[in-house]
Image 1: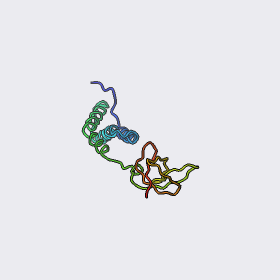
Image 2: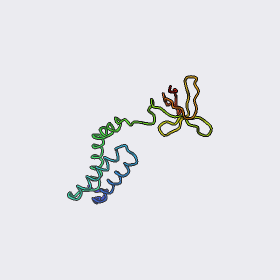
Image 3: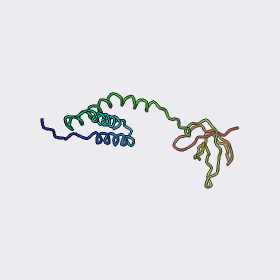
Image 4: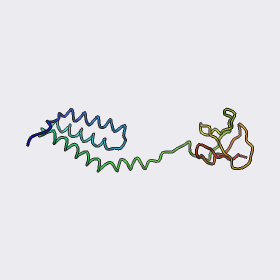
Length: 146
């Protein structure tokens, strides 16, 4: 059988693996990660084994990458999806202070000023402390504290 590809040096396989690992940092799909690991493993084995051809090296790297992806990707993605990120700025039930900003009253809440709507008819002025009931579409729904 005639070889189409010459044997690929181990350092090239290692370099391709490292490049795939670096590309994974941009994609975060955990596919290039496993193919990068496969290329690195084939490159490391290349220091100890004499490959018959470059096709065997690439085929082994692709099959190994596919198997690793199939076997481990679900585990990695599951651990990412189950991680609930707390959005501190979106939690309500705390108090904010009414401030004047460019001639308009806004509520200062957790380091950000929000436009606000009030449910009842009550007067507020700058410096009043209010309860934040809901944050929706960049608007704070407030209640005046007694």
